[in-house]
Length: 128
Image 1 (cartoon, one colour):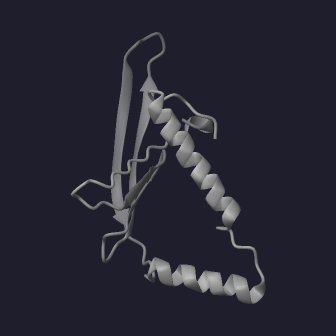
Image 2 (image 1 turned 30 degrees about the vertical axis):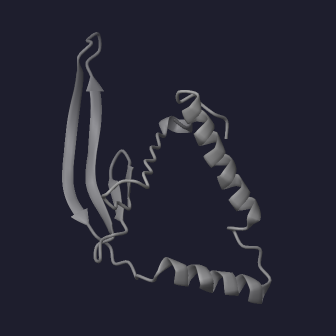
């Protein structure tokens, strides 16, 4: 759980016989699905939502579901490694500090270590 009632869930399983590379981002009005294994329509935006309404003085909670259209915007596809190499060369040529430098890598290793420590402590909340 994060600020503003944001919830994130990450599931990583190297042993799974099923290859899944997808991300779902849900909001109050729309949902976005990114599926890297799809040849076409890698990104789909769904017009879906839920509205919670409760009557005053009542413990019953009413839920209204809304389901609308799906939109798949065009996404120009280029291999991730090709993009990474182009960015690396651009940083060298223009003497730019890359956003994915050593400090970024160190930060990610810290997060992974904290996640591992959390697992060893029965899911204890860890400070990032």
